[in-house]
Length: 618
Image 1 (tube, helix red, strand yellow):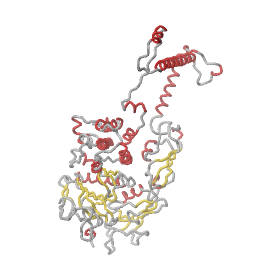
Image 2 (cartoon, helix red, strand yellow; image 1 turned 30 degrees about the horizontal axis):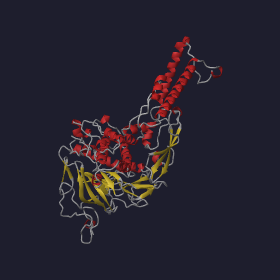
Image 3 (cartoon, one colour; image 1 turned 90 degrees about the vertical axis):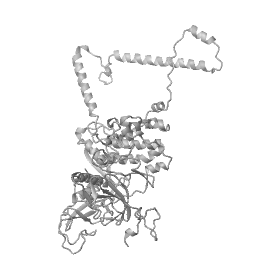
């Protein structure tokens, strides 16, 4: 039986024996937009397309069913409706006249963004790409299906706002994930409660990644903006965008969650900024948190907090107690200076009767305060006398060589002393400047928690670097968790000391990535990124020469990288097959096929030493 007849096209759950869906109200009578894919369309002989979930100027997202993986997923179709139209008879996209160059440029960016995201499958707080292929003159990306509700709906069902304690538990992992994505060169530009999913496990997942042009004005595509969350610079194609653009949106989301109020739209703020700080709307918000959010939402990008890391540091920084007390409106008590009085005044004070209701111990406290003040003055005078003694007394014979002795200035040698002092100050300034900057000074910086590629860029050639790789299913890949030279310890850069960094190589068993629509170079780069060893075998095929047409282990199944298991990658030679079978892709097997024309056997070696040799030296 055709699986399309067994599934509901609205939620991709199985229909009951009567053909009804018990999970949603979708029916086949519901019309669909003719410009987009019709339900029950099959792509790549694998994915059954269901109803359209959303669309924007970049393309459309559909719920779909993976007939191989036996699971629900989301299909994202690149389809900029201002640049192309769909041929209803063939489902192919026909590019409008004079738009071909722009269409291909945007499609290339679309593929690049999702290809980078596909390499981040170890990040649990984004909806990552599982597969990508070309069909119908466009590109399709298969994304994981996230069970849950949008943050927007979640807030509606939770009185509209959350406390700071609740926000911390939810958002800290998302902060870390977004920082890693920024390090990979991807800016989201569309962070809002609509693109953040609260999963059934109570975690947050970020969705809605798109090309940059769809979230910038005047690019030829229909822009997608989120009022209150889109940064001011996105409304102009002449302004710079960067990590600070996502910082604005992230802070706006925090503003909405903590206050229950929609932030003022950025376009309005550029003309008349009347946005109220969060603490004035909800007094339970800490003044410190309120100020950080306001700083992260500054209208001018250069005045804003620049990175997610800086935002997190500002939100969670440890502040001195007196600052916290002053924020709460507490007053500082200035001690009263007790002045000495003559005996006559003192006697007259003694004869005065005590005022009614005054405490009996008032005089005792006043006397005690006077005594304390005189003791304090005596201590200060003693210190002054001691310092004067040190200043005007020469060194003793025993201390003539001591570094702590006081030097008597000889004015006859004024010029030489001044020159010596100048040289000493110059050396001191050089020494001081050398202690600033990662890898350039004599003080070891903190590397724990930083990505390995970032560390390598910053330390340069100051160390003999070695990597202590280890495998883990829970730790984050390529992030330093230990350093052999402790933070703050001094070192000599000219000696190039040995530095050993402990870094997670990822899980021991990793899923084989999908090869659909990828050429040899792109797929081997993907294998290198996951530490998978391989050898390449060329085969006859109808696909373009150099395209990957099969693997010895089916995509999605796991391979042990710790034991060095080798994956065979079958690449098309671009020639028609001489066999009578209609199949052009080899069935996954553990042995090489009999009809191979030649074997290049390009065994992975040291193209990426840090990844192909876990637990080895750099």
